[in-house]
View (cartoon, one colour):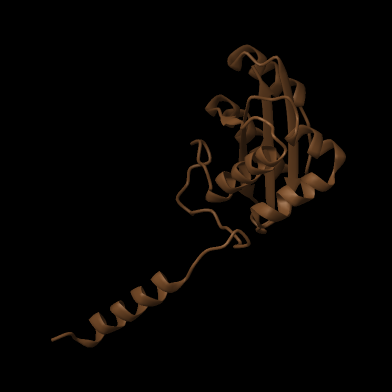
Length: 163
């Protein structure tokens, strides 16, 4: 015989299983993630997939994720979150690091602020000539970091390299 707490648990599990996620979902970051660790948020994978889908539709090569790039995207995104300001500050340092540590011959960067879904961010970048040029550029690898501040405002750093 199932008691009331068990019935309640079954009902809650059923409701949760029936809920489906979309790319328009507003993402939140788990509370237990250490900022020092390299952490990938689900929205990041969606963004990278959307970028590669766009490139594929144009007949361009798919870009591969490279973890050494992630060290730089994470550092810069945390910097923007701390300053609460969108910027390309110190891009030359990220570029130098990737030339030395990823054998990059070319490095480019897109940053973003405020978008709560992967599709809204990528669509905004595609509407901007400079950002679109980076997305459609002659690159081989990329990575991204998405973080939000204490107000829930999202910041993004997406770096592309060719090696």
